[in-house]
Image 1: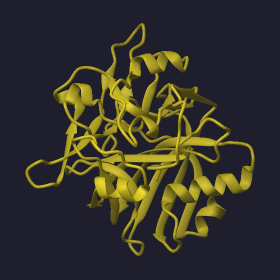
Image 2: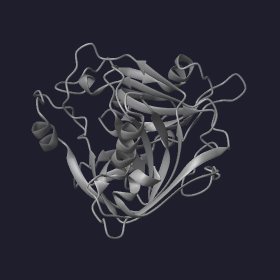
Image 3: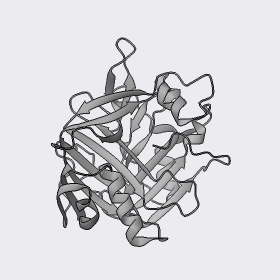
Image 4: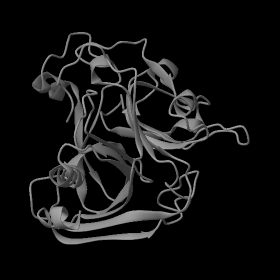
Length: 296
């Protein structure tokens, strides 16, 4: 990781450390760590959103935790908001301690949607209005027991190359491990700088979106400012399950959130992340018919 990131960032430091207490700011997660029985789950997929939406695709994250054989899992990641509950489409940032025999579930998730008044970003905490644990259409999830423990700390400042932070890490793993897929997840903070992001419109497209160009015309793009708390899930290569190789959503405590593309301030950007490799990969409700649109 150190070597790969050095090709893309001026200052890089990668080390193994004790996971910081993630219940504290800026994370404010319902658990202290991301350790214990780590796994990645990809649920649904972009073909349930594009070219036209499949509104039957709704998922309960408490059930997903049981399907990945980890009831009570702490789940974070990137997905589409539960339109069936919200009444509109949104970007979803799952941060969920799922239910177990001993504990009720805790939903710390956020969702970002387009403000109908001015086209800006509206970021809300899901549990302030709703009490379910659902998401829809697609989700890339990193799950663990939510325990403290050793994690990989990555610090990167001043981007000198063309790759975003996550792509750089993912491609580094692919180069090193070749045909062996390695998946990682966790959280990182963009401490300084700004990022290009998008939020899907509140309304699903009524006409088919058949190319990346059409998708980009449909999406709303923004530049959002640090500090941002990001929830990445990435896999070095697809072992044949039609995976989305990387997907990162973020939230903040200043009202901005969405889907991370890349930083727009290479000279000043600072990243600080905590990651772990996943022991298992679960592919849930894989679309039978697929395409390569809208995976960026």
